[in-house]
Length: 490
Ligand code: GAP
Image (cartoon, rainbow, N blue to C red):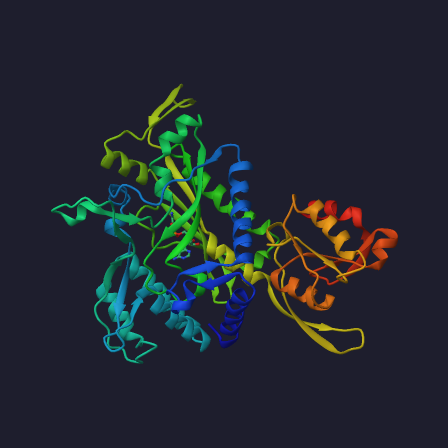
């Protein structure tokens, strides 16, 4: 990351705190690493992103329904899913600083350093070699690669490394108060993904909602991972929220559905008006233990292009595993006619294409894309500046700020009438205090797309000044048209 990128990232983090979007968790006790709380504007933005996703999945697709599964699940779930045995990252410790690194992150940081020094070919070679060795789980050669490139610890500055080891990312806790000779009996995990809550409910949902394949089940909720490298604000957290959808399909059709969802999900991102240049796909070389085909949708964050969403063709892996471990059939009877045999397709374990996006990461994406330190040239040629969040109106925390110019002369009464008219439909903000320019700037900083000022002329002709956040243009319009104008934008 360049110094300039680092500065922008730090500005966004400070802005998020100063304006009530994101606070470090339990800050009065110096915080808890990689855990964050959402403030008054953050919680609105987060909810709006979640609702936008939820609506696009469950309302705009007739064949997708939702669930809300518990965070705790039977521990065998995680044995079946492969998380107990495989949900781990190769880690390496520096013997001098005692700092632990994820091997891929350590090598990627070195590649970035090489890129910044103009040694792009060398960087590409390093990354390709790393991907090849990770895919083969060849940790001896991977360690040799770290030695070859003289990769050192940023704290101790030495290359005195331990061997590479796997480290499981699931949090464990104890369940109930029943004493047992075997301490493992009471162990439950905090779910590391929401997907398994969908898989174990596959038949419950299919039967009760009378779903026919192909169909999807959507869910949003918390997930927990004991991330080792956790120093990128809400990009990588230990407690975070996912928005996942599992799409159940007939075996043999998963390739076309994978392609469909890969395109459909990028369209969703672009529907927020974010520039396509800021996005790219990254097809996986090293596939997760369940994946048949997988790609990431990456966004150009201030910290570089990084994954925001994963699309995974998971085959019948999860349902077959749950069938095996639970000894309960996870099959679907497909009575559509197979044209090659002239008979129904019959019983099978469906294949699954998954779309999985981190809500907090999407939040960071929206903030990063919206944040601007704008220099304004005034009519007299002098300059001024403002910090503005160009958050898409559909998901902005506050849609309309209602600002009486003065605290007297009946202006607050008119303003409150407008507030009462609008607040059942969208989130409004009311403020009487401070000069109007200052109030506009505060709304810019939280991303409010519209401000309306009520002044003495309002009393004469029932018009108000509407001020648009992005252009800062102001115009006089009828007071009675405000509500509809904003509803049209939503
Ligand atoms: N069910 C599949 C699954 O969980 P994943 O690629 O591990 O796949 C999906 O995670 C998404 O969840 C990621 O693209 C990312 O947006 C988000 N995510 C994963 N780990 C995260 C973390 N530690 N903090 C914040 N978001 C995370």
